[in-house]
Image 1 (cartoon, one colour):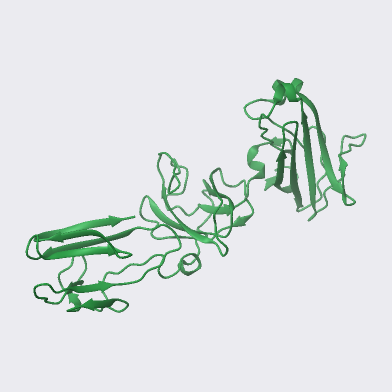
Image 2: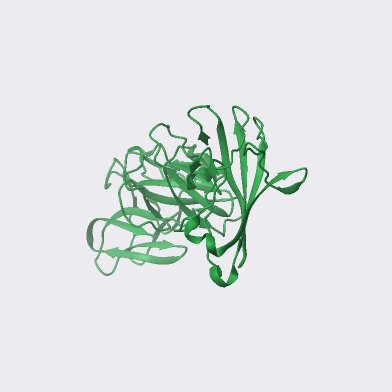
Length: 338
């Protein structure tokens, strides 16, 4: 939202569509007046910039730049009166404006155009952001989101580093407790997210993405509180599963083999762990659980064993495939599987 400090007039500006060919570029903006009517003034409203160049740098390569307004169910070229004013945007009204740039093929070819609208004398790329109260954003485009949406997991770091598909670095620009982060799809739809623990750094965040498009992570707003959603609105019970056996039972687990499993006071942390009951030669005791997640995940656990080395093994399987095995006298080890 853009606010005129002198008049209190407010505008919400969104880029709603773009089309670019070899010779022509079009972009449509949606402009809504909040609080009072707004009258665009030539020189203060509507503008165009080119990527890494000013308009004056590239003007000789452009055949024409024209602005249009959607009125009477048709695109009409924007007109200015003798006072250099265009027709008003009424309070609460939304108008569509379109800029059409015709390029000289031989000189510009297929160069990409970055458009930056100009309103109230302000020319800033952030005017088309979801909310200009945020100072920073990082974007990622998703193309394979299934019907019904999908939950994605991110590690968000307050410090500096190289962003990847799973790790994002905010370069010291967020609140220390990450209360100012927001996830927005296509700069229109705010997404539900859940932070496992915001006292850690990095934080583990789960985001429910509802469809294909560009997901923008906004940050850098010291004046807002958290908008974190409930865990249940973002992840199912199995998406974030933790078993510490501190309830003192094995509810939810299944067993097979010659003997069962039981709660033990032998644990890496806390009061309880799980161990198999006594078995003899060539016998087995299996403990298993079915878990389905809506996104790529990690399995993390600690284990130890006391058995006849190289004969009796403690084995770990995922989907029927052995991933690890230990035997002999082995102290607590941490295991991580992606």
